[in-house]
Length: 411
Ligand code: PSV
Ligand code: MN
Image (cartoon, rainbow, N blue to C red):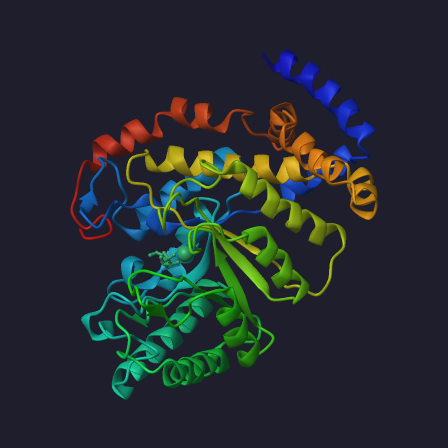
């Protein structure tokens, strides 16, 4: 088997060399890209019809970290775990040192800190845009507490998402709400240490359906630039209307030096939290094409945080997260296989068919042998999903943990 993919790899190297691709560079970039998994992706999740419980879903932050550590162990590129403050530290964070040490003992670290200003009943009519100054103050205080948690856990990303919005015309005043939001963000921004970055997510719908206060990337961009140089835009792939050209806005934000990071997932209809690249792998490839170009010709865009935001309902959680990482690596690798010279010449020569063919040629490349070689060189099993399944970890924890309450959304 190993001989087979090594033979295929040798053929692939020749094919890529003919396209002017530096294969060693492709390999070292694949080894260097780190992808953050979300603590909530290991807990139970659900739909508006209720939570769907699986035996083995993590309940405590320790269990979530242990599961995330498995993803890192088998993929080698997922060394950090994003946390959601309310879900992971429901009683506040007393023992930060212990938690950080526990994570490190499993080979991972705490990544982005996600405050939660959407679940409490007080936020029913908004958090930072609420007409009640006491509620706005409470939201700001929670975000500043989250900055403190980040400092204690050694995290340098504060990841903000707001459920603020209205359901009916007349319910709120857009501009007044905008000013409330800006004021709150600035206060939180000022509380951050110099090494911390704020990433501001947007979403055009849900839970509010008439308008949302952070409705699209342009609004997040505007809020971020008004805060200062350490505030950037977070692009969650599920947070767009159908038909939105995400790769275009990604490239625009890079050019504006404000692309802070991603929440990877795939949507079919709305914010479905499906596995990234599962339904539209070509879109993910096109997004990576913009990222690869930015790596080839860097400007002052900040380092991009590659984070997953998926909470699977029907898939086994760790399997799904490993599959996610593999989809991302495939898209990244393929985007590095484009014949850049041919593409450039076709663009300049206004040869639309050749230009598009360059994209198709790269997307249709079987990149698996290269990914396997990269994993082997990293000391990993070339088939991470099969290796994890064979390890017996999931059989063991699902038996030990069983189905429990408290394991996530609605529980
Ligand atoms: C909201 O839909 C979101 O995308 C935000 O990133 C939240 O933090 C996350 O999902 C979990 O609810
Ligand atoms: Mn998100």
